[in-house]
Amino acid sequence: MKNNALQTFIGFAFGLSQSKTSQWLKVLLPLLEKSVRQAKQLPARSQAQLDQALQSEREKIFWVDATERPLPRSTDPDNQPEDYSGKTYQHAVKNTLLTDSTGSVQYLSQRFEGKCHDKKMLDEEPICLPEDSILFQDLGYLGHKPEGVFLAMPEKKPKNKELSPDLQKATNQLLNSFRVSLEHTISGVKRLRIVKDILRLKGYAVRDQVMLWPADCISCDLPFVPLTVLLLNLKS
Image 1 (tube, rainbow, N blue to C red):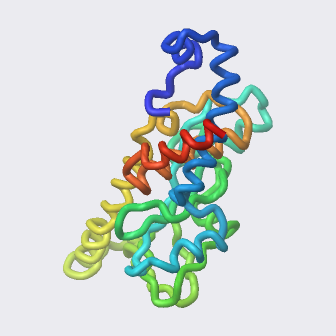
Image 2: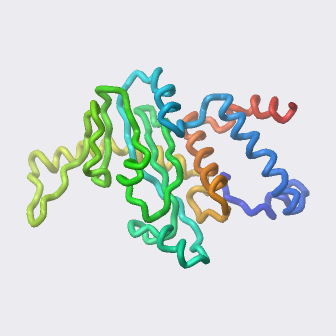
Image 3: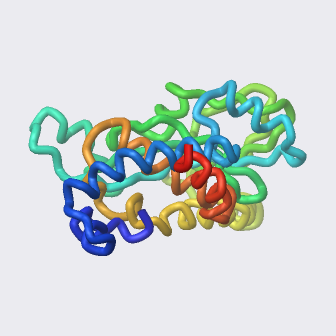
């Protein structure tokens, strides 16, 4: 996942054929997910899991944003408009990320098509946060107003007008400085090239899984934390 290597190259490193490498990956990747889940390092995928994860959260400060992963252009003409992102001018899949003040990924949404707008993703999978929480979001979520949550969002430039430099521009600059924490988290997730480069794997489930593991790595900041758990699962 780190280098997004071809199965042929991985098999060469271990003296295996490409077919054997594929068979071993189908065995080991579910064990990896099971081990990380047992170590309680996976981000929440549902509201119930998120509520449980946030019970021990001291600071109720969160950041929300969407991230894209490039896909190869589909050979099906009907799927091409669904996957095409007009924002980044590429075929992609998208996920919503919710991070906390420590930079951990607390929530990872399901996979959406590249054409889906950030706010629409959040409307289809709404996130309920504890009361009196502070949520930082960008203008892509304009109109998103969860109840009981204080929103920190930049001011939108009025049509044919300018923002006031003393108040509105200064406020936007301050909010953007806080947003750096979220950008660092997303860049940390994309240290694994399997979510940065064009995703060659096919199938809904596997494309969803390859985003789950990088989000786990940045959450615990130690990709080998569940190694002992993985070895126990291999032994069993």
